[in-house]
Image 1 (cartoon, one colour):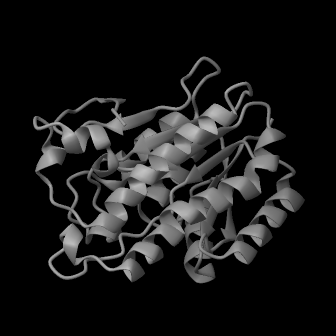
Image 2: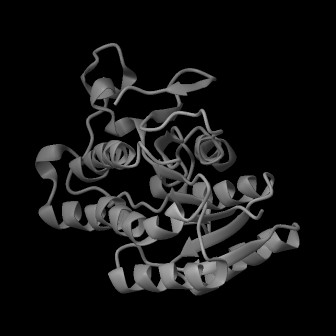
Length: 249
């Protein structure tokens, strides 16, 4: 039976590597992207490597685009086994980047993609995920959104002074993950949040110390969990350590 995965923001970076690594598991990958040219090129690159890859146009901040993507997936594949909500933006920095310098315009802009878009995509595709034998939903989060890390004086996260939009959007993603996991706890669907770690991508001007290949590994792990795997967890790279593990919310 063919396993199909849809990854948002998949034309580059962690999203693309998540798609590429899933193909190694024999998964048919649907690469979601706003830009048709870039999305088609990414899918073609994977097909050249022997993957079953397809481009699906989607703008996660546009409800009509989301509905069209869901309709296309249903028409072409009938169901969905894996959803990786990877698309995100940083929003840049207002002023000196401190919370008190932020603007509501930036906050709204970031939440439209990172939070509202994630919820809209999940709700649109949940009927297709319910048709799968045991679907997996992976929400790509970040350790910078961990309340535990931010308030633990022994954590490197507590030393970071960050702008509100991106950081708090990932805290919101964590709660959204928990709520979906609770709603779906009596189903075979598992919902988890992935922490890629500080990965070099366009989102941070490629300043991260982890590669996109490494950053994709937590998402791929959670997307391919066995039946006895966890749900409602935050899992991935732990700052300062080589291994992966569970992260405190």
